[in-house]
Amino acid sequence: MESPTQALITVAVGLATLRFIKSIYRHWVYSGIPSVGHGGMITSYLTAFQYLKEANVVLLEGYRKYKGRIFKVAQVDSWLLIVSGDRLIEELRNAPEDVLSEENAMADLLQSDYTLGKQLRENTYHTSVIRTSLNRKLANILPDEIDELRAAFRDEIDLKLVNEGWTGLKATDIFTQIITRISNRVFVGLPLCRNEAYCRLNIDYAMHVMFGAFIINAFPPFLKSIVGWVFNAISGDRRKAAKFLGPMIEERRAKISQFGKDYPDKPDDLLSWIMDAAPPGPMSSMEGIASRMLFMNFSALHTTAMSFVHALYHLASKLEYVEPLREEILEHLGPNPSNWTKAALEKCWKLDSFLKECQRLNGLGALSLPRKAMRTYVFNDGTEVPQGAIVSATQTATQLDDAYYEHAEKFDGFRFSKLREKVADQEKQDIHEETGEALEEDWKYRYTGTGIGFLAFGGGRHVCPGRFFASSTLKCMIAYLLLKYDIKIAGDGKRPADIWFGPACIPSRSAEVLFKRRDALL
Image (cartoon, rainbow, N blue to C red; front, top):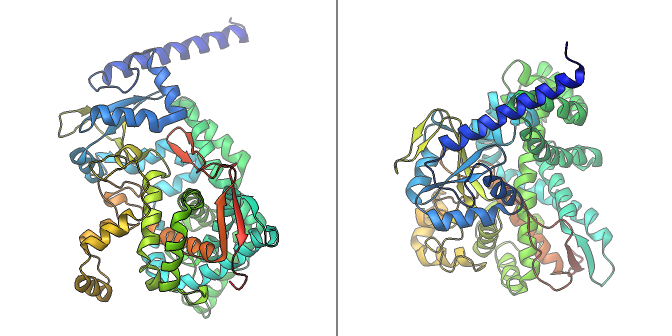
């Protein structure tokens, strides 16, 4: 009979043997697809580790070498396939879900069954809530957003500033907190949106999701469920969220029982919309709804907070854009934020362009359009993709391509507003404003516009539905900041370098932005 030590050695050797066999199989199955960096069974690990530190560099090399083709990039335990060029990107984003699945790709990449909860994958009813209730009410919720924005700026910035002098503040921490408050003013309303513990829970949850996905993906498939269960048991995020939201949910359900679904003074917020849309069963339970609200906060923080800090670093290091943007803001919005409207925000073309250019050069990551092959699939160029493969497009490399943008590697904050001016015949623009329908040429140059050359919001049927809410929030924040403060980057004044962790692009967490009051009346 084997001793425990011998048994452990036997298991370890068996696992190592299986992993070696898997490596041989993996190398053979993908051998017909060209590699970026090292492609050997052993040497590919060198590229895999380089990818962890500078995915943007690795992918740009592959894009320039194999543009118009599919190439592969080594990961620690798999290959990542990258499509490039118009034809293949179009094919990727429009392929049927049962062939190339976005849902299953995200389940693998984020380990969403464990980090976000299996219910979110099984039923994405929240997407319809965003497309209908949230997007259709952007004009109505804007006053609440602005009210919370002013209060949050006061608490997080004004109270920390030195009178009539420059004060250095760490932008990432401050604006993550501010955006959490603004988003939750729309999501759950007052007073919970200002509850420090609730805001901290949502911020921590966003970090737990990304860190959890990294940890769980480091384990072999048969251990992922165990590691995922342990990870969620330790964090307890969903349980904590249910404690915060439970009293509100119970109160609203009591009123629904007494007065019906449209009871008097019903809050017009995301929590109400989610409760109305949740299907019967576990998804309408207190924890089911709380999990959905956590996910919505994760999405808002991941998209809006990081995008804002990226834009802030550009703005504070390129001061030549400050005055032109202020002039546009005063012209269309005016000096009083209480009078700002969605229609007026849409007239701020330079502001819209500045945000889009920031997103183009410093987006949230190197990849876009992730898909998982649900069966063997042959692309139009003849490349055979095996079942189970993760296929993606490279966002950063595509958006640095001179084929799509003149002097693509150069920052031009008003690039897109100048393009809109070229194509926007005034008479046609008047028609657009009356009908609410954008001209095709005008639309693709907007911050929320998508296309082959701008992949920040994905594309096809899975294009990001929350980008309109994010756009509105970002514009209000930049406009308010420019009217109220002077800003500049501390130190040498140069934009802080981004941090790359795998394909994720994270703005510097340590950099300071200097603030000084301009107008105490705001």
